[in-house]
Image 1 (cartoon, helix red, strand yellow):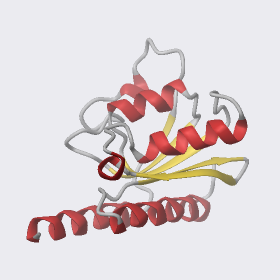
Image 2 (cartoon, helix red, strand yellow; image 1 turned 90 degrees about the vertical axis):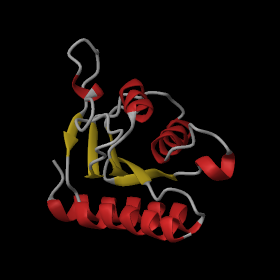
Image 3 (cartoon, one colour; image 1 turned 120 degrees about the horizontal axis):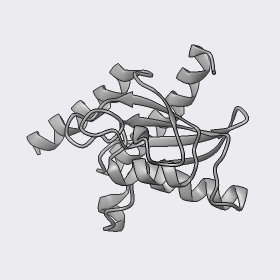
Image 4 (cartoon, helix red, strand yellow; image 1 turned 180 degrees about the vertical axis):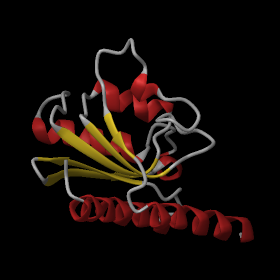
Length: 154
């Protein structure tokens, strides 16, 4: 398992992606995928920009990682994401065979890694994902709170 400093370094990279989304007026969520201690892909939300409900940070990072590795199987890869994945993204994490998931903030409204449902621990699925919660949680939740506060002031 990565040491705390390494987890923070990778989550900080995911936060940089979240800031890119924030600056585009998108819900500020970022994700990075790491293999052998190296970031191989990054992604951030672009639903509004692309007018695509599947343009989530996790999906973008998964697609880029698959292209880089020339396979759909992301075995031995880790994902760092600033907000707990939704059901669609949790399914994509399972389908892509990501081994470990590091989550910043929990999502009490649509989280699918334990908050609302836990798709990553369904016994019948053939792939299991190891999950670590709360990496830089204050920073990850803070950018979301700031975004929605700013949006409400409109």
